[in-house]
Length: 353
Ligand code: MRU
Image (tube, rainbow, N blue to C red; front, side, top):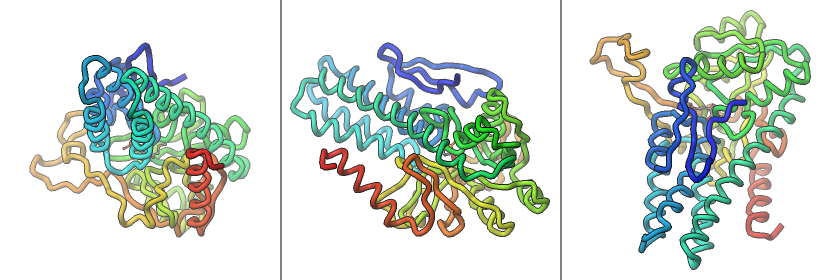
């Protein structure tokens, strides 16, 4: 079983995903800055896992500050700010940090020991909740596929990206277990090859038959009627159903629409930004030009070539056939259903419901 991140004896242990699939290297640290840097470098990646890592990072910081910190609150605010500045697009990061912030506010009058214990308990809870959400997404989504389904997926949405069995990939593995899935095509996912390096590796370990394609092969496969459904994850979903996900997702949605193939997006409710109306306001991370100009440290373009490298794009909700969450399968119009989910959550957290 792949464990990309865990809390172990007061430290965080994570798998360095930048080294996969050639090396399985684990890093163990008690330094929150190492965790923040791992998120920046994509050693820890995938929207839900980024949130989980940041929640543990805040707990780690509190446990280190227990002795001798005269101003715990401001020191922890700096930790929250540090994690908030790592990557801008996945809302799960800010959702998890907000949960830790609420703990800090609620426990403000308690001792540093109690605060540290409460932050760790919340991080463990966020991790455990995500595990359950992944399982339920798999169960909800598997029902949508016809038998002998051939699906296309993008980037990596599996164990490496979450606290459990994944989002889109949980639907893939659940359908495989239910003997409904025949084959998976994997976009290699330029520029950082999450499809080739990570998804091909995960599906291989699960024994799920898959074929790797370059990102620009999808249209050809759809034209030949080989693909029955596209399934991707999400980094941020807005109230109107717009979806930010790994760049290239929008291409797939346009192609799927043209070929009348369902385009499914799978994500936990922690990926829904209940404050944002539509996708035009989603901050899109820009990656370094080096990631495009070099592959495995070998130059593939002239050094002074100008590069445009957004990490994500935004697919309009109108191109999404359904959004599969742990709470059920949602179809347009999304706003009222998402607001109902949010009110339920807010009610549960404040003890109203
Ligand atoms: O840049 P990454 O590798 O963090 O991007 C990941 C994705 O785009 C995933 O599709 C998304 O986070 C959903 S993961 C369950």
